[in-house]
Image (cartoon, rainbow, N blue to C red; front, side, top):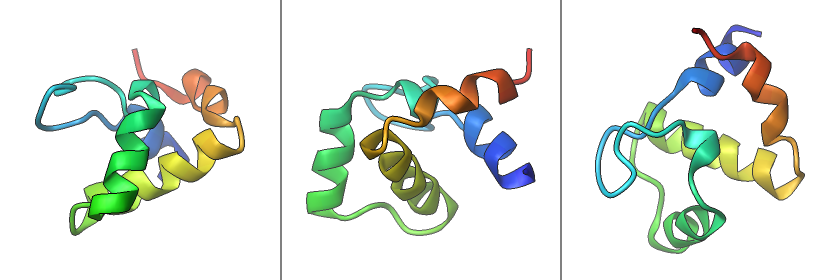
Amino acid sequence: MDDLTELANARMPFGKYKGRYLAELPDAYFVWFSRKGFPPGKLGQQLGAMQELKLNGLEKLLVPLRRP
């Protein structure tokens, strides 16, 4: 559950969508990353996991896990 809570609260650290929750990023952004390659490390893993959640329509399950 800790990984899901961390994913729910993860924000984009750079670029056009800096500061936005990963779950709020547009689908096209994940498609672009999947073609170009996800960044290395934890962020890349989180983006890959979020893409899977979005593909299955499950990203809304993370909203209750967000910290205020």
